[in-house]
Picture 1 (cartoon, rainbow, N blue to C red):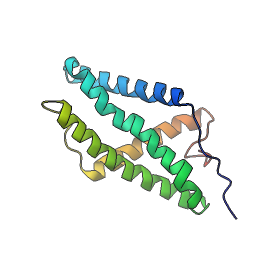
Picture 2 (tube, helix red, strand yellow):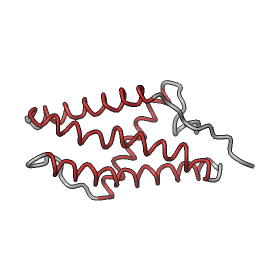
Picture 3 (cartoon, rainbow, N blue to C red):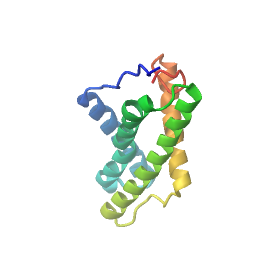
Length: 144
């Protein structure tokens, strides 16, 4: 029996508004806490990795991998968490390279791959908890 998963679609404007807003807020928080507001533009670019990059990791799972994974809920959840983990590692590497290129002394310490993957999983679980509380499709209800 084939899955009846519908591809996730969202207008580019909505994606950009959300992900740029998240990156701007995160860059502001880091700049203020590190007392280096002059570094905000570079921090903003670094923060695009988890915000904008995270969107594409989620799209990869929803629109490409999910239809190819057995429909059992636990298998779907394990596959999604594995994608989040791998995506977190890749984004951490990209963010680190970007920070090294744009900042004389990057404020972000090097994350181990386990920490980076685990951190992205934690971020996604919090985001999906917020979606669940709003009655939207999420990881927790198996609809999103």
